Length: 396
Image 1 (tube, rainbow, N blue to C red):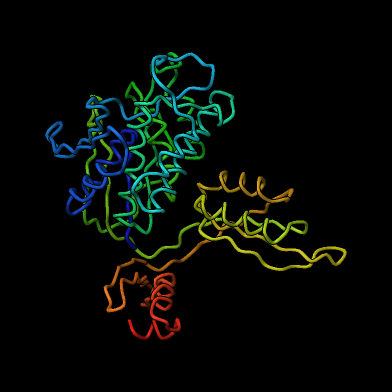
Image 2 (image 1 turned 90 degrees about the horizontal axis):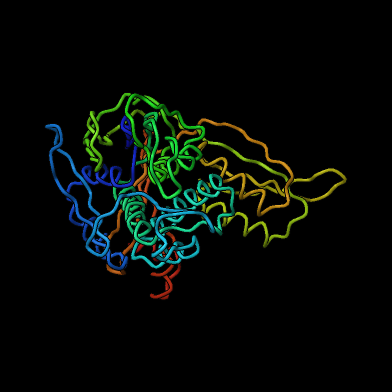
């Protein structure tokens, strides 16, 4: 199974994760070209191949109006004290609009929006105000968007089947920010790392930022020691801060044995919702990253026809999915089942045929191989050539 392991012994930040993942690509130029043509005004992304403490790796530079700021998301709640009074501050709605306009795939766009939603929720919890009142500093926002979108794009390009991470070193002491001097981990970071193994260690300073914590929470399937793994590539992503120890995230890409992954079934019974409302709830859960959502007709007490809705998700997605289920359905309770899940290795490729480009999904594992053409591509070819779906499939 194609596995990505992230070693966070010196924490994690957006630029460090971007740099480490970039080193796993055979050629960084296509990524850098796309990043510099996202449609993110006044932003330039550059990768510097360098050596720190005798170790070669990559350091990312995100320039906004030609100047470089930290990788962090500068945010504050409405009415709060901050140090950027001269700048415009973007709301979550503005961030959503900006990310939605970028030149990336729908998957990258969805992942980036989900990561930012996690950050906004963390800031909301830390400051005790609604997400709608969270605002992000303009320059810091563009810098952070580049980091978040960069990691999401690299995850799409690398296409790991499983993502694992080590326990997270947060650092210790205090950090200076727009709200004053705060303990490490900062309140937003601590909220994002809830349920994730973390430790303070002996390094003074902020090692894991809210951006880094949100990316780890969203992408990592689980946290712990590296499993037995045949490593193919290792990437070193350097941070900009200097510490007594090498300040980097290490990323390992390789093959692990076919092992079950843990998945959650979140289940509720619904007898007072319309089909349209059920469909909308399913769409919202899938858009937020659920592995699958389905309904089963059931009969409840007093002979009432009803539906059982099942949401499959990773353990780290539980809180997000529970909130969405309670928000978009009429249920008063949700049951949780933990299940081992065995999955085949999957990858996609685009084939050029005489009738056009067709995306094909390949799956392999447990002694089985199979391939299937993407329905949307087959349907488009069938309609444009006056064919049945079966005829289109036979011709490619």
